[in-house]
Image (cartoon, rainbow, N blue to C red):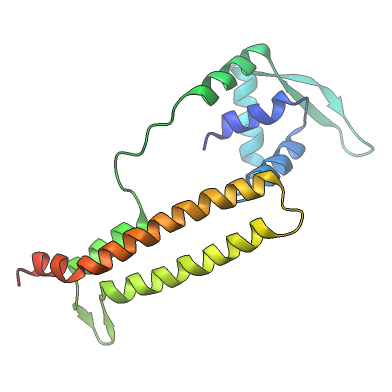
Length: 185
């Protein structure tokens, strides 16, 4: 996710200070990793440097003085261009689950003591973790008063978790063949 463009998008609605941008980001993207304040202010400095955002004065609201930022016309154009670009599907699998299953197949039955690589057991445990997370997300999106952003992000995560589960089912059905290929038996 492009922090630069997300913050720019939040600024298009009107001037905001860094604290408010961080809070709104975390509200609007509840399934994403929360932004650090340092990341917000570093990104704002770059946006100002690039002419996409400008300082729009200060605001104190009875507390410490805060700098207000607003998107420039150039910033709006940049945002609309970015939002209109098609994101290419990822050409390579770069998923930790995939890597762990492949490694487990490569070292199946090896290990010392009670620790042995068992790809079938790993897939079962991973499946249980996915199912638990799917139940949590379903509860979050079904909660009374769940806002649109929460529902959309939960749906997005659920679809990806479901795809992982389908891959795990297919892989589990192929384990004997895959292990035989690797071990040469």
